Image 1 (cartoon, rainbow, N blue to C red):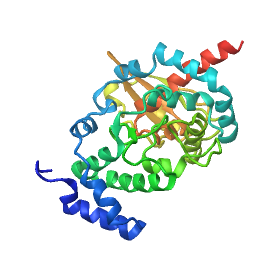
Image 2: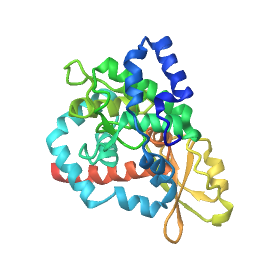
Image 3: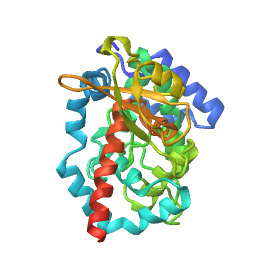
Image 4: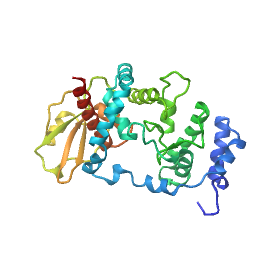
Length: 311
C-alpha cells in the first residue's frame, strides 16, 4: 500500500464494501468511515510470516507450552471452574483436560487474549498479505457480521495478529459457527464468560467429529533408518497398521485405523507417534502436528495433577 494511499481509496477495498452492501445489507455510510480510519499493521504482516509452528523444532515448541507454570496455572483455573469443565465434557463428550489444555496453550487460561485490533489486523491481512488474502477477506466479512449479530464493539476488540479472539482464540468464522451462549445471557461472549468459552471449545471439537472415549495418540518405536521413513506429517489419517509396520514401526494400536504418522524433531533425534482420529480433530483447531501434540501432552500433565489432587 503506497504511503499516501488509505484503504478507503483502494479499488479492492471498494469492491469488498460493495459486496458487503449487496450481499449482507450493510450501508456504505456505515462501512466507509470504518475503512477510512484503518491503518496498516506492519507487525501483523511480520508475525504472519513466521509462526512458531514453522520456525521451531518440537523440543523448542514443547518447551513453550508444556511447562510447570502452565500446568500449575491450569490447575488454579480448574479449581475455580471445574464444574463448568465437567458439564462441558458430559454434554459434548470431549475430555475436560483437552478443553483446559486448549485454553492453556491458546491464552494462558484467558489471561492473554491478544493486543492487536482485530479489525485492523484482518483488513491488513485481507488486502496486503497476498498469500492468504482471500481467506482473511472472508474472515473480515465474518467479523463484520459477527459484530453486528452479537452487538460487539467493532473497533475496540483485540485479538491475535491473525484475528483470533477470546479465551479460546476463535477466528471470526469459527466464532459464528461454533460459539455457544452457555450462561444464557443472550450473548456469546468468549472474552468474559467462562461458561461460554469452555462450552464453545468443546462444541468446536464435537462438531469436528470428536469420538468420545477413543484414543488420541501413542508413541511408537522403529527399527528403520530415519531417512527411509515418511516425515511429511500429513495430518489426515491415511495409513493402515500394515503400512506402519512396513516402515519399521512397532506399536499395539488401541483403536482401528487409519492412522497418521506424527514425526517430531528433537535436539538429536526424531520421535514418532501414531495419530488416531481424535489427534486429527485437534489439528482442526490449529493445522499443526506440533500444536496438537502440545495440547495432548499438556492435557495429560493437567489430568495427572487433577487426579492426584482429587485423592
